Amino acid sequence: MFNIPDIYKMNMSFETAEHVMSSQGENGVTIIDAMENVKSKWELHCSGHHFFVDDDEFFEFWQYEVNAFNVLYDEMKHLFV
Image (cartoon, rainbow, N blue to C red):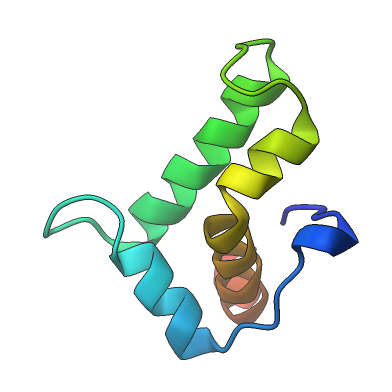
């Protein structure tokens, strides 16, 4: 799960989170694939790729996706054990 700064946290339903993630990419991309894509963007940012100036800029750009990730992960975490 993402440790989202309070300023970027959103209340989001499971259905909205699912829609946000399913809107990523082309048809045939699963929710898990979309979640992995968002996670990989964060890992790239953390590894020193300078797409964003800082964490705030990352979360501003990916605000909907990281909140959707957390909602979906929280609902499905028992599947990831």
